[in-house]
Length: 539
Image (tube, rainbow, N blue to C red):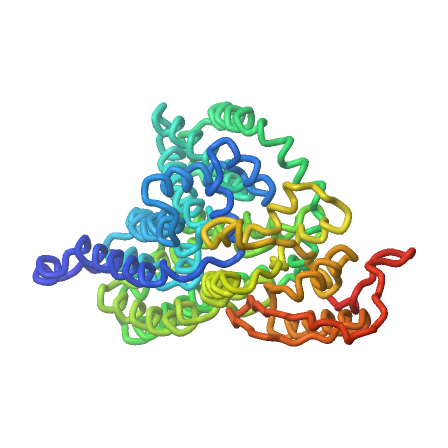
């Protein structure tokens, strides 16, 4: 049996106080960043909830999201007002609440509180969890509900009561409507159930017919989402822009398994070998088989299904945020591995090594990869950009051309749907709204934002210039501005960049079109073959 804390230590450092300290420290680490500028996905949330309650569902679906989460944020912002902390409030609370829940799950498999405390601490410092906790998107809430559902399922499999069955059905439905890909967790739970049935000593009390009955209820309640899922499937080409066909190693690298699993396996093996050679018995303790089976199914099944769906190009969902229902499994598995050590002192050694290495390899100081780039929230400072453009419009009324970088924006070339136009202008249409009387907003497509239509060139010339707000790298912004200047020059107009605002991955440039020389011929706004465009930019 694993060793217990000494009585003095138990009195002075009870596990509950340690867990509370870890949780409060995690909340503080998240709170100080909660006032940072929103980035483009969060601005979709702000735009969705800035409208009336009746428009929330439509605006959420335009961004390929189920509306449930946005209704919750809408309610929060009506109480607390529209601000960055209010928009992120649900995620902040949910991302912090998963820490004690991870502790509670691992505590079921451990005779001492040290391994579950280790799992909770790893969850608290994990960079992915920190990011999702600070994002005004449904992912942190998805993790909280998913973890609660998994805990209920683990108890339900042991002893199926009416209350547990009802709670699991409600949580499964809620999880699906928070984010459609979260249904992958149900597949993991079924795999865990099958594995338990294959081990006679662990055979569950939850009967197969009861499982089928509960799954049928969940399926029926999810049917209303089928039309929206069909709409998303019709736009599946959009995902090819940022989700590549994965390789086998990608399944092992999407989360830092070298720290969560490789390192504890190494340390446990070394400590066990030293104890065995020194004649200490037992060298190691067998881990809880239920916990081992749950961690395997919890982590492997969602990733395997998402990887297979993406590899076959059925649905490109092998993406960090789409498989986040498995993101907490490695930290729980680290706590489970710590239970193999037969003394609290050895568990402390393992915990110290894991937390020390984890602070450098998986902690909040490590930038995350988003769309192939290393970024943080502050890398898109839309707030500073909007503030400067707003101030400038007070004394020079120019049109504002917005290249939001949304993948749906290329549809502007084929459609004049006002809903699509408003959607592509969402960065400056909600919390960072420019006053309507001061701003004339013009959306630009994702590819080739330096190419304008004939009417847009005419507007730029007539008003003597314009602001161009461009989401992307600094290099992409330079290329777009250079293309605009070349386009103006071909139309007989010189141009000058009057001012520039650098907001990280969003840039605003005030481009002035100088009056043409006296007697210069006027270039027509369009030609028979189509609009007179600037140079086309590479994607």
